[in-house]
Image (cartoon, rainbow, N blue to C red; front, top):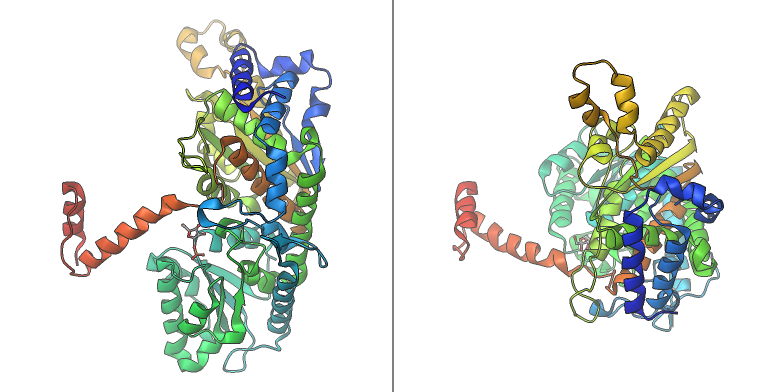
Length: 534
Ligand code: F6P
């Protein structure tokens, strides 16, 4: 086992060799490549064979993982130790989705019974709302939920709803995250206050955007139903007393714990809106899928471990080959929000420039992530992926059986997913292009433009169906992948100090926009404030 510095040096050496060869050639040189680099984890099939690493490079990366202490770090995570040192907390989202009877502990204190109690309350609430046992203040059953929250209190529920919502839902779920009043206005449009529940989700219950929208939604309810409509207010928070002080009835405040990070919180009562609108059994299946991925992550050998290998493939590109951007393209319209979800998960978790000890990081950290649903992305940013000057690795997701519609269209979708990965890999040589253009006077100028360099890496993640179980496993896969990367980079993946300064300055700017005294600013900022006063 090399020490960690030697392991990083071995990655540099491996990557230098990788620059001099093509990925496609590795399939000939390594007959067992496909078998070694495809794996099945908790119902997901992952193919990492189209990355630029050779099988011996994979071993180099596995050594790096071991030398970085991944196994011990994983134990500390699952044991509920304080892995989020700067905030003095464990990160124990796995406890939220564990089966009944589990025994997770946060800093030695048992938490699983508390988790089960909240899950029980959520189930009871969801079933009461769906059966009409629980109704609005005029006696009408609830037909809509407006979910108010932002960041981790929004992106997970929004993703899940888009992925799993029925075509004609019994209860419509809408979202408002942005403090831009346009979003809440759109969310409320067409809804009957008498049939609408407002679920405000905020871990801290101090977030400016969320409280602004919650106040506006409460005012919207009260303007047609009076204060009796406060019974339509529901809240989810790790600070339940603040939610009650806001006016949410105590028995409609669902709690969670400070050991649940915002971007890892979909498994907690943060998912309440989904549990109500989709039915609690769906939510329980999400838990089961994520728990299966937890088991896999915890027990599979590192060389067959999907979160570990996915992280190592990404780190090979990021650190070995210096690729700072990654695309994520689900060939499933219902997963179109996946890139947005991953942006917070990966960039808020691992967009760090110092280690958990406060020292500058020794290696570049999180790649920037962007993406959209395929095939739409093909008609937008894929030009750059195929022929741009930067190599952008891509994660392609595909779902074998579509959830609705024409199977022939589904086949076209899948053909595109596979073909894009192939095109990125093999490209099209200038020789081939010239053969096609033979005899044309403009062949010399056209041929380079029609040439595809290829050798552009991709991961391919296949789901048999987009069901709640696989959805849970998918999210947990990327959660653990993000954790593994954080361990390799020596950073704390569970804090987010980088969001604080902007919040503080926004409060100061807002005071000025509201007519308060002028604070010192750079000339550009001062000019903007002057122009925006109204
Ligand atoms: O943007 C910072 C952040 O703290 C996220 O980490 C979090 O998910 C989001 O704000 C919302 O916070 P809260 O749930 O406390 O309203």
